[in-house]
Length: 189
Image (cartoon, rainbow, N blue to C red; front, side, top):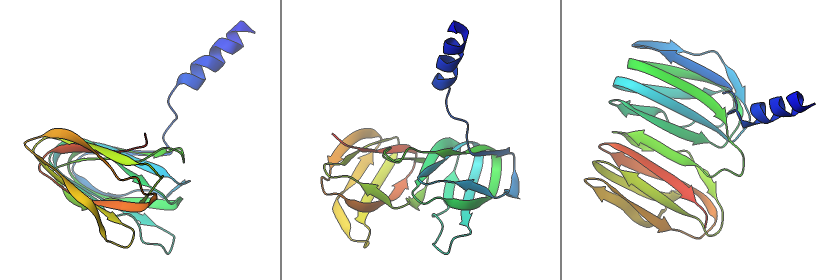
């Protein structure tokens, strides 16, 4: 009995296995289709010159904006909608990409390095805000679902960190420009 309890405690403490994972070196590759429930997260580690990942879906809804990264670095992208997906990967360097389930109560985190991109649309609860940090130059502009700018852009010159509170519940996305690694974390007090 003690052994069974110990095994249960050990296995419940282990991180969940990814839904799918892909790795490779300099190449262009289309992955097998994978099925995931929403929300989910694409997580990557990259060593090299350039990585571009297009996310395709069988659904009629538009897929997420592509991941485009120049230079080495890690990142993640949260995606609200589940379904059947596949990736088109273009890499000049070594990459590891995993697809992970994300609890529906989890608030998104956006990470990247040396890029200009729009994030996926996310739902934010009342009283929310975001923490941001980065190296180099970072400009993160928040928009509501109708593409109206919200508040003032978060700007870092030479690195640092900050916090902005938004408070109003709704659906939002960021337009991000960075010259180095960054992290934007949605928070709720």
